[in-house]
Length: 97
Image (cartoon, rainbow, N blue to C red; front, side, top):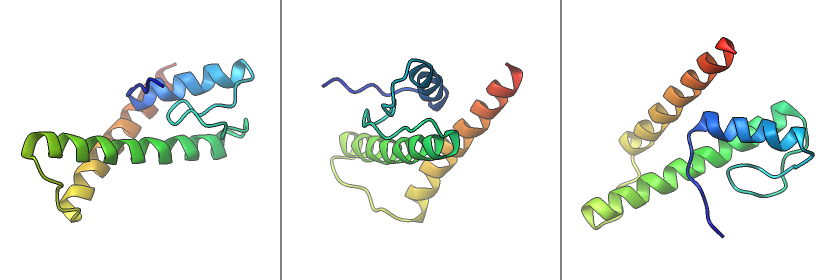
């Protein structure tokens, strides 16, 4: 299976498309977790997105440095800040619609 890595806004757009087409697959993990309840579904998508971000950051660090990084406060803060920035960008983008 091919797995895509997209921006959060793209995943949310795909979620909206999926729901409109009676598809309950999560656009991040592809499982049938979405139930049409926006609060539940977006929470699931964000959790998947955060997990994906951690995985990608670990892989990036390992490719760059040849070792598993220390999972410390700085590591978590770096990922959290990236996700917070994307959530903010996404909310601004959606307000403009």
